[in-house]
Length: 109
Image (cartoon, rainbow, N blue to C red; front, side, top):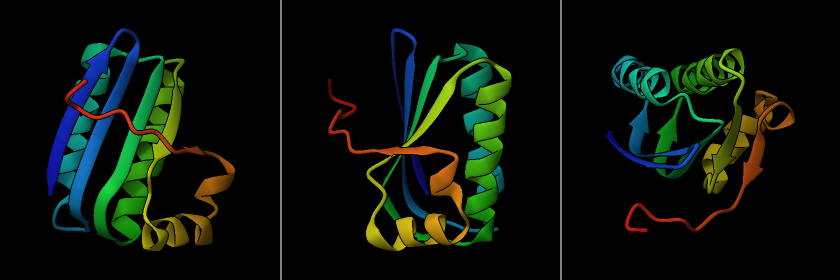
């Protein structure tokens, strides 16, 4: 699992790639939480374009970050989720509480 971050103004984009499962979710959660607490973004975008597998631990990761961002007064978005990942999110009802967006901002900008 790789995690890349872009912080610009009051926005934070976290790019995840690889698998989000019970082996990787804790490390990702801890890293993302440190970034959220440090930067306190008003808009938090979780880019899942590079995620090729996600289990229930991944759902917990997403929902926990949603809760944390809400507690800090921010908004969370899921960006660029692939078909398999989006299917899992929809089956769990995540698409009803977290907005999904398509964005092509790269970490090079």
